[in-house]
Picture 1 (spheres, rainbow, N blue to C red):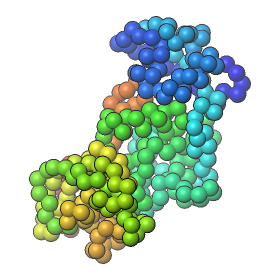
Picture 2 (picture 1 turned 90 degrees about the vertical axis):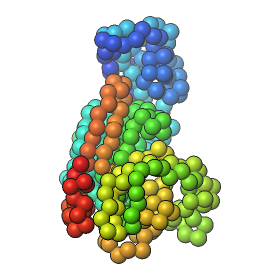
Picture 3 (picture 1 turned 60 degrees about the vertical axis):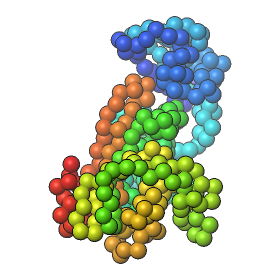
Picture 4 (picture 1 turned 180 degrees about the vertical axis):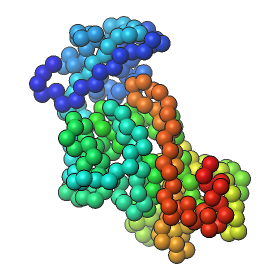
Length: 309
């Protein structure tokens, strides 16, 4: 393949691979966007067992599929242009060829908001990957005050695949939170969320340009005026969990925007990612341990045994 190739991915099809066309494999099974498939076909950048194959060619178990990308196939090829942090401290929870799951600390931004900004998690991941052929590409974000598991793609090929898996609910993100008051049972919040017209930093139920949102919850324990709750996102609106809980009358402890308590850190943690790996579509679960301040708070309110489950 040409010298200008920037990204190359090779996969060997498993023993249980269904017989289908190469196009079906790329688009329907591997979830590659039409744009990617178009360039692979037009440039002869997809090989089957080392030779270019037409899109209607049948694939079979054990076949070797190689895809090459110049970089201009991606709508934002400079999306990983983050200034690497020298010698970063990054807690890696899982890593393979295509992605890394890291444990984001509370108080750190997920990504830069302007060119040249440093100190964010993606700067740290870029530093962690420095010297390799990989980059750091944002898949989803966590609020600055939220800690926990966050997926970062190592190449741009898998970004739309992971986004599609998240939006279709195949990748599950579960959070632990301590909230004010006594929330009970299990259920879902389904109120639409939009921007708060009075405060550019905030969102609210029924706000401007409100979009559908769903947060599923399960109460793990109540102690006095505190509740430990497990939450799962069905949609991914900005501040979704925080807004839904505050609107229900149970704001997250330490939330600087939606709560009036004076605890110094927000008790919302991305505890697990039920992850689907691109290409193999193997399912794994990645767990991010709770930070010390969170476990100390659970101990203080007698919630620690349930919080460790």
